[in-house]
Length: 481
Image (cartoon, rainbow, N blue to C red; front, side, top):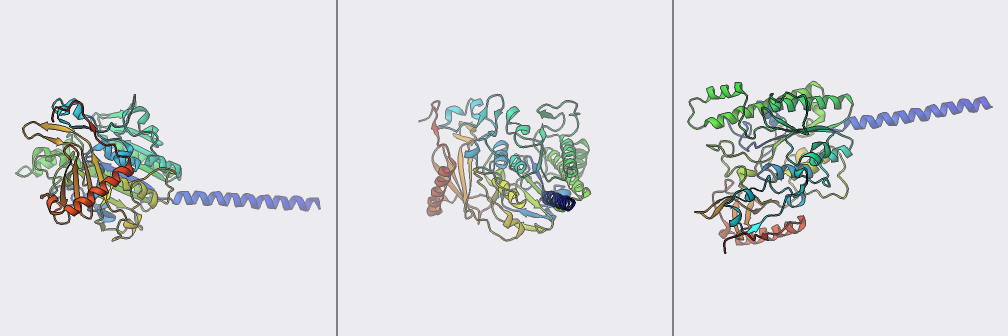
């Protein structure tokens, strides 16, 4: 009898052990099946800076292939016409008044002819002593959200959201550090033993591939953030590409030499994207990896504006050329190849969208300002639910004494139903463009649509209240009346 009990006990233990192993194996399989995310962010790449987006001068075959394999957006926007605030919106999933990274720098304090002419002082950016302006540690970054969902995370490239305590290693990334510049690039935290004379894009790509290989080896899903420094200034192309484009456009009267340099830099960016796409395929994870390609803001001003035309404006301005960006999502078997969406979308949408696509949980008790675009991506033709997009841009710079105008100043912008209204904080005026009929912003139609102005002003005020917008403060150094 005792022997039978022992035998039964052994069988029972074996069955329980087997069930436990089976459950563990099942959990591992479910984890492995979660899609990976490769998020590629270009720097200062304009809406017209890709061949696939309509510029025949640009050579971007690898990004164009990505464009053809996924969904591209024709009305994608950055949250700011400059780098740091837009990147903070991507990483935090929040509008500028919430994350409080308002500007790249306080240029108005450095330019002597600016501060005395400012009627108001803009809100101060969040700053941590010893780490500078950046994203506060109480913000749940996109990296941290993926970590909480069992992902390995990496970020190699331009961070621009603080140093030291606010740097990449402290903001939700298992691997990575900041890399800025092209040749002779800098790292933060400083890395020893790196050949910084190589092209930074090549190095960023190499480190990203190493991380992906390690994640695959560990059989874990990954979120890899790849913020290249291309095509930000300084204008430093690879010599062989510069020579190629100089020869190709030597007789052109519509392309300046500086623009030829940018063409060479775009080609390097395209090479890097192509190398990453080939690597996903080589590892056999292409079908289980969501790829996002976009830019942080519009293109900087060039001689002939060939990277922002036909849109008005450029980096540093809230006209369409300063905030419109290319945007491509690819996920084979889930996002239809060759699809397009005309829906207005914005940087804060990336956070909830990537969590939604991967079936990941959102951080608890944390506000996300964007919309999950999963329905739009998986079912072309689907409309977004939100009613408006809003921008707050507080960058005062370059006051013209003769014209009595700033090159850029504090404006609040709202786009709703195809109308785009700008509130000029300095004088309380408003101007309006009807993007439905005038996408290139050639005519201010504020006087023609008083009811539209009234509705948009009310909606803008609601947004200010919802996001904790800080109202203007009077400038004691103002010399005007």
